[in-house]
Image (cartoon, rainbow, N blue to C red; front, side):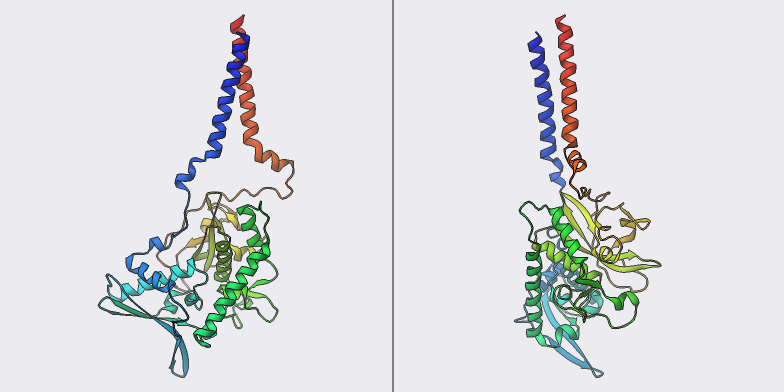
Length: 379
């Protein structure tokens, strides 16, 4: 009987241990795992998707950059025409075109047709609707358009090569985790090679014309050799590297709480271990703590406010009423990513294996109780 009781206790303990293991490794959250692929595209209606697809198919080899002289000033643009299945009034179509343009800007950092502006209204001032045919101009600034399509194509090629070189420079080990990579990207963009555009922060002087794009983040430099950026440039650069490393990432436009008002802003969200977190490289690069806004949750507190309070997706401020698009952003985790201690010491190991330690103690206790019960039954 004693042997039978002992075997029974050990068997029950083993079953509990195995069940716990299956629950941990199987992670039944996969059914609700977040998916970023096509996230903004899927929020577009049929006509907006047609515009998006048309924009993404633009090729500088066959897309001439045109110029108009108005009042002595030269304005540059490209012209886009397409058929919409159910084109409405010009006002409705204009909003649809701007929505699609903004989606390409957020999804594709290499969308050169969106490099000149962050404001869809400035980029696409009007549309022409004739039956089901829609035509519109995408305005482009002198810095990108003056040299024509050939020069802009060179800028695109140089940017792609520079992004590849930056990614190769990380030289991650085969065991590097997604968290390691995200942290490295943030650290890289917060490094001494980059700085926030001083003309924007001071409100005076000439702003860098490339400060909101990956061309400015990876190719163009100021007189001091630094890449000069604003929030949209930091967000685009972060996404460009994430895209190369197959890290699920989205760019978000909206407002962020400033000292006295809500300023227009751009940041990112990422998927890490099947959870969605916010990343604000701009705030990390310009703040005292370069990891304060790295993989944060909705209720992560910085400077006395939560991330969800300080970052409002797809809304405009009262000063610059820019159109931020009719999109919905992913909901973040409540808490930020639990970064392990840097030293990798005994505390980290205990934290990592804590669930198994607890399960082991429970199994040992269960085995002891069952053994004791069996032993009493023998008496």
